[in-house]
Image (tube, rainbow, N blue to C red; front, side, top):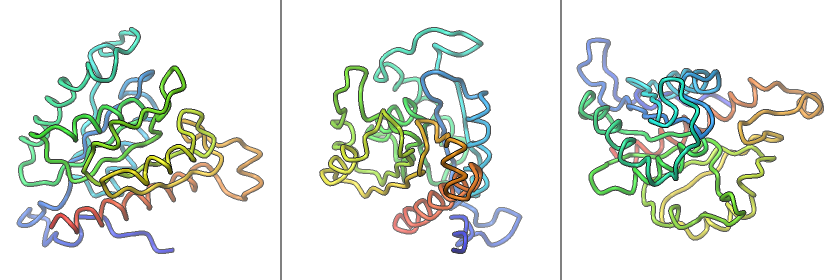
Length: 227
């Protein structure tokens, strides 16, 4: 299968910046346990930036983990204001560029909360390992049922925090356009066991590359509907 063209290629005219406004700005939030400087975040920041031809992929640290702190994360709702400020600064820096909100695990939940705010005009939300189940095991679907922005889920098939049957049931009830890309054998951080990779005859990088291709296609479609 051919790799989808980066979203901005449809409108980019030249390298002088005459018409590059379809190149998105991506605000990418980390998960609960690791900051934006983690190897996982750095790798995915680079992959998303290239695949989406982003004008910038903005990463940041929530206050509870900034500066090397190792405090327990607060409830996601308490991170929304800080996250929203980061988003507004990114939008002000790149006016006219479509906004993509992305997040890993907890960061994807907060991204969805930010997307629901009236003063935030996101073109799409990208959830990498969405934590559908809470600490008590209950399915947290209220937020997903509120969101109206196109949303993509990338999930590992062995992610215990997001039972796929529960996610499919929620998706059927959602107002917004949603898509799911499954990483076969992947855990909450998409890590696939060596035996599973050998059985499939593939590699971790190849599986993640397929996910990134699917993300690029979804964002391209979302931006096309926006245009």
